Image 1 (cartoon, one colour):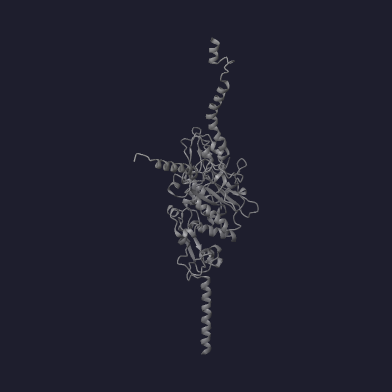
Image 2: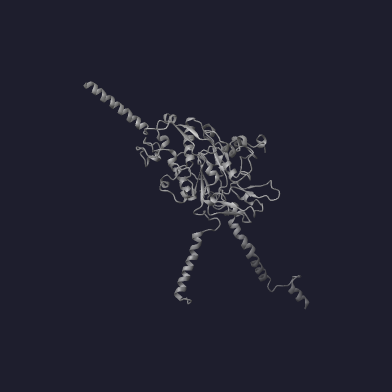
Length: 174
Length: 312
């Protein structure tokens, strides 16, 4: 009886330890396996982002989420103010990176967080700088259409596909 | 009230004198010393972020209603184009272009976006004798095609070789260049089309003075990533668009031999003499001549007084 109780306690202890370890790695109890990034869909279709794969590949949420996921801080610059030990209410990119940070309103009445995060990229750049920046280092895909297909609006905008210049064969001539 | 006391008069003249003394110091709008409008907008261009996607070129084409390009905007073969021994330049049909450079010792190419830099004291403006150009308080260098006579002085004056010419127009050829999307965007406080379209935020739009601080902060925060220089902070008196680079600027096609002073300073001293020569010299030398010839009117066959003297 005593042995069984001790075993149970040990088992529970190990379980607790594992769960603490697991929590420290992935502080979020639940994280999505896939994220559909389509908020800026226009010239290109949205990206079906394999979140689970990237969680495995980076091993630490803070590589992308800075100091918001309760998994510490990777960047020295962020570490000056944040220890990243507490998970924040908002962890999604678009909660902090505004899709329109250059509105006249923002430029003429800077919000308080502009004083400290005064060089924060807009949402489109936050995605691309983070993704392409890392992909360059790890030989991931870096071409536009490696991640998202061009839409018809995109073809029209770039004068490509069916909207390509008719004389493109001799167009580059001098 | 109408009577001015001696005391009031003195106080007034002292105040007036002080105002006169202060005014030039405060404004200093004299040519060559203008450092840009304090609230003027600018763009910080970070070359380290550019991936050469040419989206900015497409955005400019659409916004400025320019003619269709010869090749699609997602065609990267244009980076290999060499005309007259030079990489691509801005034209009357493309106000901005991206070129690719291969700096020595770098693993990957460096891309550079070229457009009007919207100088604080533009050489195009100072070279234009019909006053077609204007530097707006918002920071744009715009021009009025209606008064342009097509002399192309600005094309020669511009240190960045930006203004282009509608050579194909036989009847009314004019200058064409980037205007910071002034009419459609900047006037309303919005960033230009190229800035908004960029996926990598290579370009950051804001007040020039704020962006300059951010530029220096980026250099400080990322030791080893950037060359410790902001191209356009001081070049030709400061430009509205300025650049950060990971490679020495001359290796990315920048002209690093430009003076820190506005281009107008090269000719300002000479130009200051012109009015003096034209107005004072004729009067002065006529005076000298009259003094020198006073009372010695002999020997001048065509002189009136001489004629009279001969007459008697």
